[in-house]
Amino acid sequence: MKLKVCGLSRKKEIITCINHEVEFCGLILNYPKSHRHITFSRARELIKIKRKKTKFVGVLVNPTNKDLKKFSHLKLDYFQLYGKYDNSKLRLIKNKFKKKIISVIVVKKKKDVQNYKKIKDNSDIILWDSSGYEKSLTWNYDWIKHIRTRAKKMVAGNITINKLKYLKNYADIVDVSGALETRKKKDIKKIKEFVKQVRKL
Image 1 (spheres, rainbow, N blue to C red):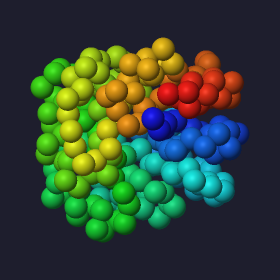
Image 2: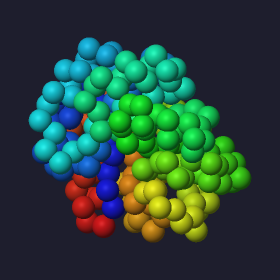
Image 3: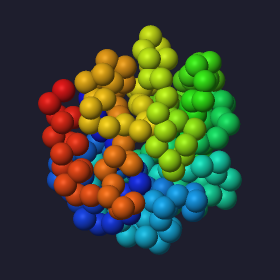
Image 4: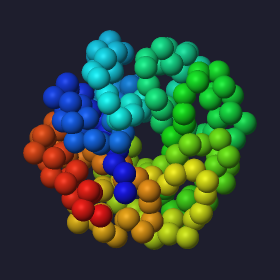
């Protein structure tokens, strides 16, 4: 199983992730409602850190074309897109901005998980997330158990260490944020322990 640590905002957090070979580092770029949001200039500085094998992900909520153009100038490996998309829209974004795509399916009820069919052809990764955005809400991960798709499967929404063994049968990647925080700041000890547990799977 691979790991994405999201909502990173400080240099030491990213360096810790890179040194522990976390596969994806997520930056919240255009959603100021989140306490994890960072400015464009801050993102530009953080992305200068030598990433080794780690991929950088720019998280965008309902981005405008102006947003996509602006953030495409950052040396991001992926755009993670929250919003209403279909395969044709994603293809245009990939071709225009030359970024890989993590498409997000917001899950409120069971039938929502099937929305992946609208975006599966032009998504590199499909993320099923809770409807909480900056809040870590739980949903029934069993709903994606039998989904098969060319794109890698990622899950988010109140991901904790004790759920990892259960989730390894459902997803290729776990996306974690809140479980790694103490008083709304990423906790280096928690990051290291979470990585350690993922590597045991």
